[in-house]
Image (cartoon, helix red, strand yellow):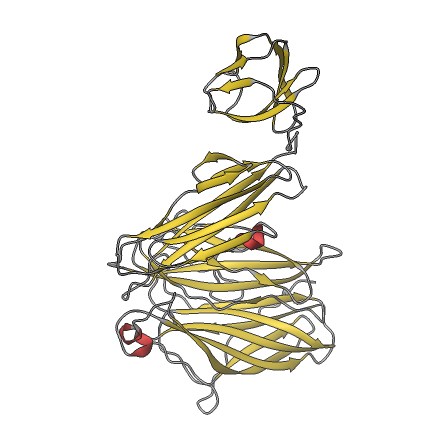
Length: 466
């Protein structure tokens, strides 16, 4: 049964036990963990700027259930860390250290409670009445919640993160999390709430699905990608749904309120290269994409340069999570370099995308450059060529725009078969001694496999049609 009663959600603040807030840049997310039958711990992740906002020692969240329970839970906070955005040696310039460059602090508030009796649906609510002026929405209260369907449910914990971003810099925010119950998580953009039933009112040109123009979210990983083009604060709502790993039933919903704080920067951006110095059995499709077949081994390099010669660049990547057993070496500096080596596993038809983010240490505000790189693993059609003897055959040009020339230097007819990466044969024929050609102009652009056969000799080659 869903919550149908009208509830007045709020925080019961008392002067002696619960502090109040000044207006400021704030991000909040809630999580709850079952620690025993009908007993739970609550954590509230709170990110604040170091300019205007003050933080009390305790906060109050309210638990409501469809069984008629209302419980106020006092959470005690502690400073988790000071966020500098990225590594930077100029501490005296940051607001958290008395300077003028915007920075934020992370806090975690925690506490325990018990439901008086098992209940099929209940929620934890936190709200505050004020926030900074927003560029994309009307001024409104801040509201977050977790909704639990079942008595002993846990919701995912989201790592506190910086919300400071630099104008015109491609960037991302990672809401990836792990549910203690092992549930599958699905992420989506949604309208933030001002209370339990009212969504925030966006200004013209913005919406819950487009709080920043061009923003996208990966529903599986929770990664938001966007490029801010206006200075100011922009609120984003993230809905995180947890589905049971056995029954696929919806177990919980978490609403995250995240305000992106876009600032200006005088810094020159670091620049990531495409794939460089490719070696081994891989074909470069474009500057950022490789194609390999099953069992192929290869290595490549990525370089980052920064026009500010005094800056040092640090590389961050998730490549080892995306390419299992990959070998990665990183040399930070200016330029910074990353070398990757990998052998494609025996799992066909995969498209694997990893991210590389480069961050400089400019004193006023670090700049970043982030780029995705893709490895396309084919279906393994003769990925290891069978060559019994040297087959004297030239295939050119590669890449081709249509006409593929085959020069047969053998004294016998060579059988030709061309397949796409799904294994479908698109051409069968033969090549006599001398010059031969195949017209591929009517076929789609992409990678193809050319198989050449004689009675005793075989050869496989990959070609790219533009």
